Length: 76
Image (cartoon, rainbow, N blue to C red; front, side):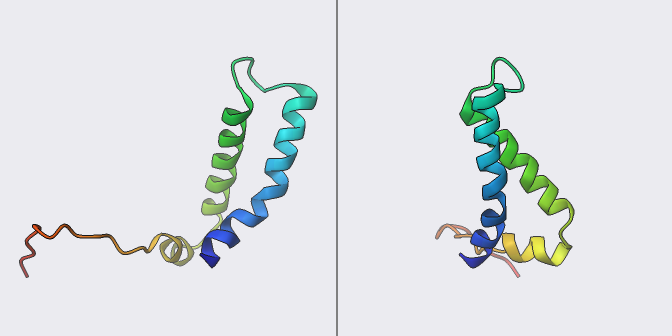
């Protein structure tokens, strides 16, 4: 949970400025609505953040256990 907050919290000012820019200057493309503009800005920020992160940081953020179905057989 703390990793998700640390990942999301620094992006809030950019997302707010995207909303202001969207209403002040209009969308970058005529077909973009606010939702798409925010998603595009968030993806850009996430990619930029992951680009400047170390491998260990990315692995720690994405290291979540996956549920294994009960009928799945594991051979060792």
